[in-house]
Length: 104
Image 1: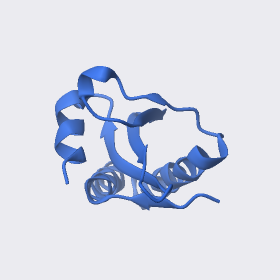
Image 2 (image 1 turned 30 degrees about the vertical axis):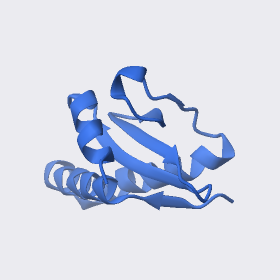
Image 3 (image 1 turned 90 degrees about the vertical axis):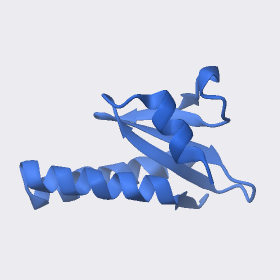
Image 4 (image 1 turned 60 degrees about the vertical axis):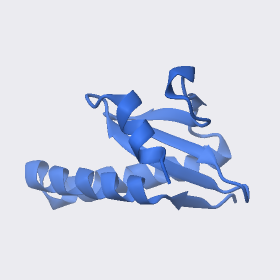
């Protein structure tokens, strides 16, 4: 199976999602949501998760799919692994946040 690597910006966003969910809905719900995110990441390689190319206005190569209330941005890394670039809530300004999170 193709390896999945959660990049730094994505890890920060996932931690924010976990903390927010835990505070709002409890630890069990936060765990379930984040576990579902990671299951979706694994589904990229198998085709279980359908992605579309990142819109041209982002100015970066990659793909995006929706997981519940979040958009997951990912790209294929040089070694063929899947790199999770960032995870943004549907209400976030995606173009600017994605550019910020995709910078090395």
